[in-house]
Figure 1: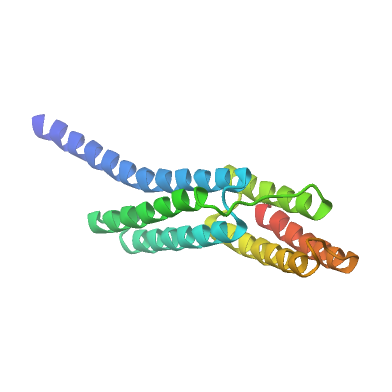
Figure 2: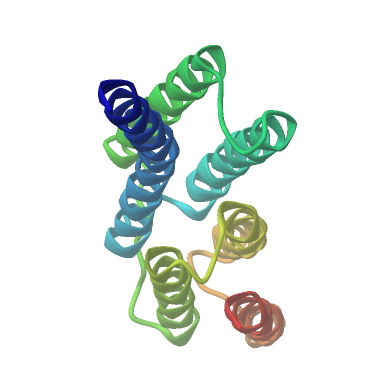
Amino acid sequence: MKSTLLGALAAAILTAAAFAQSSEVGQRAENQQDRIAQGVKSGQLTAGETANLEKKDAAINQEVRADRTLNGGKLTAAERAQVNQQQNKVSGQIYNDKHNAPTQHYGNNEVDARRENQQDRIANGIASGKLNAAQTARLEKGEAAINHEVHTDRSSNGGKLTPGERKTVNQQQNVASNKIYRAKH
């Protein structure tokens, strides 16, 4: 009777440990996604910073999936330690990027208001779980390219966009908007 009870207790402890292991890594990844989404929404993270963070997060997630596939759905202690170290590094970069000088400022014109709206849509997709890290990285890379083009155009035109440049940016934002929609749905 005692050996059966001890065996059942040992199995329950192992199951709980495996659950804690998988939920700890997953919960940490989810928390970091929430921090990134908050940084996007508040403007503390630029599109380029967000794309970089999401690219790194996607690589960690891919590594975890591959390791679990090779180990019957579990991570070894060494793999957990390695993932924890990688997540610590990304966590520090999230903090640094949110607290550095570059921020995403939006003006009160149509181009900037639309850019802010699309950043909010991406942030909401991250927070709701509809966008994974890889999708977010691709979307933010596109947003960063548009932002860079707008900055360059404004620099060469005394801080303003010409009507032709506004039309081009609007078309690019239409494409980006459709990509956001498709990624979320």
